[in-house]
Image (tube, rainbow, N blue to C red):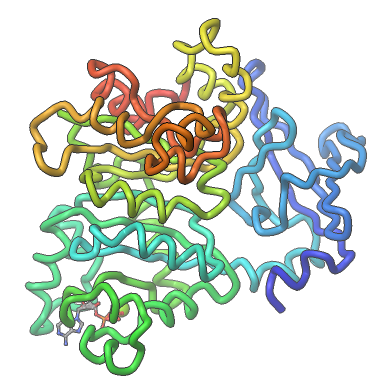
Length: 385
Ligand code: ADP
Ligand code: MG
């Protein structure tokens, strides 16, 4: 049974969630309940043993978002799902929320947008994502099982010579489904046996075969830890002659991130990339320059804290030593997507945005701020504030 089928099965699913209160530095634990028939939620305060939130319809949350490690926004609180809350939920959802580790290899970075689209279209969710520049030593650690094989040296060269994009994917049967989407190891074989597979479409030869996928649950766990154990693992950001792009939560949630990235990669190089999230406090801090100037400040803050978003370090493809801030702003179009559709119908915000607040992407506004904003986001300066 797929998640889609149980979206309205009349069941109640329970999770253990935590919320960290930045004012008091206390972490609260809740039993969080989700009713599929009317998309309602309720919350129970575990420490004080009392109802915290009475059952209320909350259609902004769907069952797909409720997996271990996910962060959800309930009114103004960001809750981290830490565990299943009862055996019924564990039994029903665990198999549907399997995780695996995926990697886009350097030869397919130019097709990363199309590969993300393929992931989303096939119902897999991206739980973690980060672009990394692996050192030779790190590449050897990742592929140590292949040491001594004839292709080992070219494999290590390939994955340490340019950035890779590592991902943790979640979904029903994620490990097998991702391997099926990849197709056979050899691109040539893939083109014959599975012509619509990722390796057939985006691979070059047997070594440069576009993507990696874990081959067992144990390896999925080890590989995920390898890439995501700390935030600065293999950081690829250059912090020079760059500008910041944020693919906003609403665009990520609606599955547009791949298409947006694909459009960007036609004209710009992406030299760093990460899936991340903000607390409301961090979102307000980042957008502080708009406070008092922009009447939409509160809704902008709410949107930015509403879910995962993708940060990108953008560099001008044709002229990588120039300041790309103005060129990228032009490419994004007017801040209000409705105006963008009238004036610049081919711009990113015209195509993927909805209105002024949900305008698909943030881009750095002032030429002097590109490197500053990239530095702030990619060195996680908002954390621990
Ligand atoms: P997979 O990536 O499909 O799990 P393996 O784990 O066997 O395949 O190999 C790891 C990677 O090593 C492959 O994705 C490919 O890049 C490279 N490789 C494997 N076999 C060969 C080969 N016979 N010739 C060249 N490169 C190979
Ligand atoms: Mg393998």
